[in-house]
Image 1 (cartoon, rainbow, N blue to C red):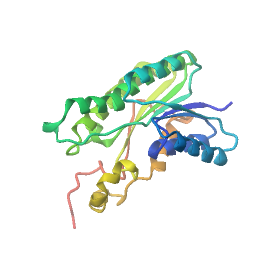
Image 2 (tube, helix red, strand yellow):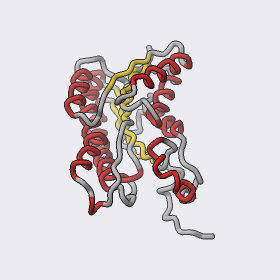
Image 3 (cartoon, rainbow, N blue to C red):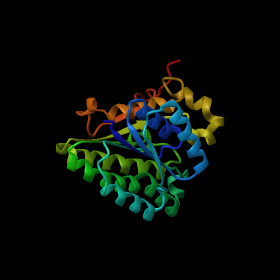
Image 4 (cartoon, rainbow, N blue to C red):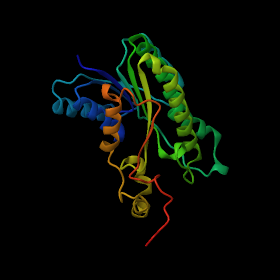
Length: 252
């Protein structure tokens, strides 16, 4: 019987890559999207062509809408347990820390942290009854492992996400549930498009000399949902090409 996986934010970038990775492993996948129904329909058509026997479902979900998140979470509480929950959906807001607007920062916190906490709580209850589950949060090196100028709100939301993940991990471990945090570095997605003029200089700071491909993040997420990852719990896994491994002092 295929494992059932729920991907929050599976329309584009890392999320779309996670969906493909899980389908390639034979999982039945449900993924959420905020908008773009035509794009979602085209994506599902392409996925069904690539994975003819796969079970694929979609659900519209705006993580910024607290009432919508609550309603979605309530449906999870009354359904059979998913074997895996992978949280990808997120947003950013760029402003210097001293200039940060609270309303915009609260929206980032809702999307990147509170929505996950509500959905994870809902998914956890059936998992606890089943005494099995895998929860994976896609965070960032920003906030969890380092800081970046202009990313105070984003970093704070990812740091909160990390604290929640690690606490949930130790609280649910005895029920056969693992909860882990992936910390990507610079990934070649639409989120990086506004910074295209600085790409060459930014890539030069990464020991690997390039941005990550979404598929490289997805491969780690997919592994963390497997039975073989049963003893990986409360972990923070950087996937950043070595960016956070050193202090970056030039030697040549």
